[in-house]
Amino acid sequence: MDEHKNTKKSQIRRMPAPAEVFIPMNQHIGVPCKPVVSVGDLVARGQVIGVVEAGLGCPVHASVSGVVKEILVKHDAQGRDLQTIVIENDGLNTICPDIKPFEKALTETDAEEIVEVIRSAGLCGMGGAGFPSYAKLQGAIGKADKLIINGAECEPFLSADHRLLLENPAAVINGAKILLKALAITDAVIAVEDNKLDAANKLEELLVDDEMIKVRVLKTKYPQGDERQLIYVLTGKQLQAGQLPAEAGCVIFNVETCAAVYNAFSHGMPVIERTVTVDGDAVSMPKNVLVPIGTPLADVIEFCGGFKKDPAKIINGGPMMGRAVHDLSAPVTKTTAGILAFSAKFAKTRSGHYQCIRCGKCVEACPMHLMPLYLAAFGRKDDLDKCMDYDIMSCVECGCCTYTCPGQVPIVQQIQIAKGKIREKQAAEKAAKKEAEK
Image 1 (cartoon, rainbow, N blue to C red):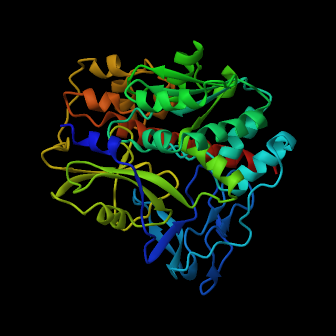
Image 2: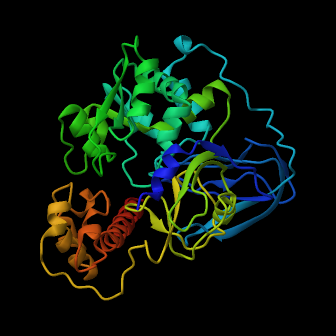
Image 3: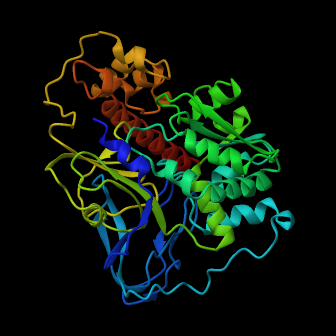
């Protein structure tokens, strides 16, 4: 079925802000934000409404102007309970008076100032990872000698990054130049797969005389957009288990994150909206939509004409690495790259009965050269030590193992559960050790 190709031709459409937005205080890896507004407060578009008092995290901002209606605990798309600020939109689109462009010329700006602007703007990895961008940049300064801009967008159906590169490539390029200035390096590459040659050609036109930023066209191959795969194909360096890209002399940012960096400097606007691909055979009019953060998923689907078929599966993100949607009243967040809805005919559903037949297809498919069948088996038995012996934390959760499994074993989901238990155990051990040292 080729219906997903429609969104590659679908220009980004701005969606009107809904009557209410639901803005979670945790849209990133790290510590959840604490609200700095109260019920009844009048807020403006772009105003800070949640901050991280200590530790890793990103502030969150109001995506509409209006009145804080409630502060409650609400499910996100995956069913997690998160503290959420509800803002009743007044329709005035009042911009916060603190929003203003960065006043210094880039040549007069230092790395510390750039990091602070990115932190204040609430930027995190908008490709889906959600790692705070200021921390990634900070950790790469003095270590990375190459900046990689990830425009591979290798998951099927997703095309928001592709459209951004076609419609506003200058924002991506200028965001990359700001990052280069902070890193004090002159070597950047924008990586694009060869199914997006129109975007690559447009970038090359703009960069024809640029000595710092080059375009590399890569083979269309999943999961080409994974950071380890990108680093290997662009530099020939292999990241070892536990290593960060900076240890290979690289730092990677998604194209939409790059454009958000430019937006924060040129307009002073924090992350209050993002582009989302809405697609799947159950969607009436697939589109790429610029959506205010906090908009309910149901409203976004309604903007795309609603469902033309009963959806059997709705996914937040791409079909390979995305997660099943728990509740359509859940909001769009900074990491919502896609909303996909499939009918029973198109969706790959599982019976609930599965059996590993030891065929080895998951091993052949694994880009990290792991043994997914054993990781899943040990995970089911809560044998976390064995999982670690088989290098479970190197799994990038690409889903290739599950996709290829003829026995319908939910391999990647079992690995995800086991990794979560390992992280909980490690956190508990760290806390116990810290308590013992007091």
